[in-house]
Length: 107
Image 1: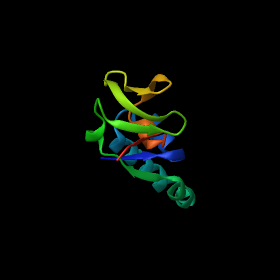
Image 2: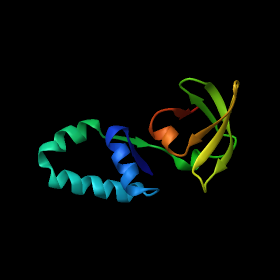
Image 3: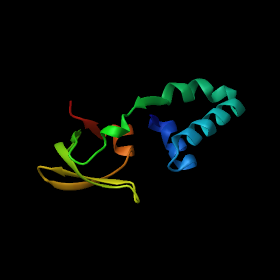
Image 4: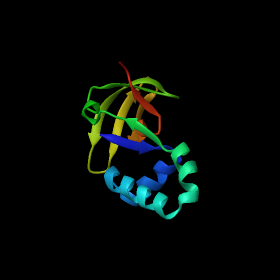
């Protein structure tokens, strides 16, 4: 699954809710109606490949501020992950924490 992030990603998230494909369609429609902005939009749109099957309890991740951690809970209803770091547990928005670069998988 490809999830879109960065400045335009905020537009996609706010327009599409949980469905990034709909968000991509809305972005394409926006670009078609605003051709002068297409170059700027393309420069700020980042496609990030996230293997969502790796988002499981027990997965090792790293956070820019908190360091290495482990996913200990996934709340699909509210779209949150709970990650245990050395400083304690933190809740992160799923999958935004990955698409916005706050969390990365530890290889």
